[in-house]
Amino acid sequence: MAPRIAAVPGVTAFPITPPSLGQGFRERPVNFVITTNDSYASLARVVAEFQRRMADFPGFLQVDTDLRMNKPELRLEVDRERAAALGVSVDAVARTVESMLGGRVVGRYKREGEQYDVIVQTSADARSAPQDIDGLYVRGRNNTMVPLSAVVRVQEVVAPRELNHFAQRRSATLTANLAPDFALGEALRTMDQIAREVLPEGYTTDLNGASREFRAASGSLAVVFVLALVFIYLVLAAQFESFLDPFIIMLSVPLSMLGALAALRWTGGTLNVFSQIGLVTLVGLITKHGILIVEFANQLRQQGLALGEAVRRAAELRLRPILMTTGAMVLGALPLALATGAGAESRQQIGWVIVGGMSVGTLLTVFVVPTMYVLLARRRVPGPDRTPVAESVLTAPR
Image (cartoon, rainbow, N blue to C red):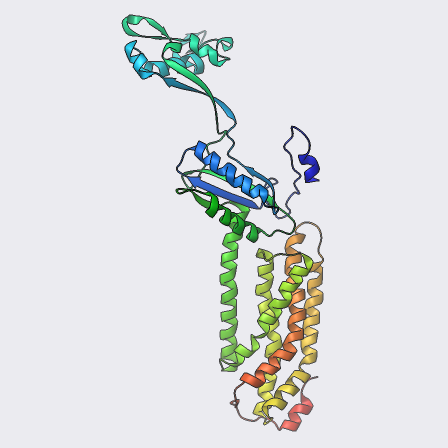
């Protein structure tokens, strides 16, 4: 659709799918800001080169900027030497142009209880073309009237429609949509690389809109993910009275991450804010499998079973609860993964992370955790024997 619309001559248009998460209708995922103290003309040249490099990259669609040097403007340059020779001051030139073209209130009068402003200004038909400025006169030496064309040179130039600023500096914002297989994080890294190659000294970059929120949320979610791992580890260490058993349990976390990332890749998802929320949720869900195996193996070893026999029986007896937990979570997350309608893009990312992470994580956990328990577990588990071994095995839940 976009190439067909772009092929229409004389029209700059592109299709937009209205966002479903509360953003503005014209909000774009990429909002890259270039700031500088240089002139807008120099900034426009840099932005044009930056925009050209973005357009050459297939991941960016409908690249645009808010800095457009297409507003017609008249620039008046005073010949100061000639003006001084004719006795014309620059201030008089400026006041004459302001009064004749823009209008100036020089007084007020009242009539029948109403007050009216007295405005000095040339008529509309006498100020409709650049050549009309040459017909204005300014008072010179000895009260002689000097035409402005004798001391002023008029140039027709273009200027930016808006003088945008960001962080109190002159700025231009580049916006773009993304191709379906191009993630926002990858797009921002690409733009940072282009900035290093294109921007001269004195130019800096920043983000705005959805791009700024994405980078801020990505950084905070990374911290949250690390804190979640540390918190779970400390809680398990207090529960098991050991720093080694929680480490064995949390080996299931990277296994589940493998399944979650594989599910995202298979469904065309990306590692965005919503999928990262799903990863944080997955950490708490998948560690339950390791807890079931390690806790029950420790109980059997306290009752006198050997290390290998204890972990084998624990894996066997806890297999059904593990599969029931996985089945419940996967079936509960499937409606999220298959969601449609408004906001479906956020629910699908979370759902596929949980479905893929729990499925693959469970499959690998039931083999990896018992193996690592045999290799890394404590040689002796503290605690008194509570029941005979035979009775414990017979009464263990199935």
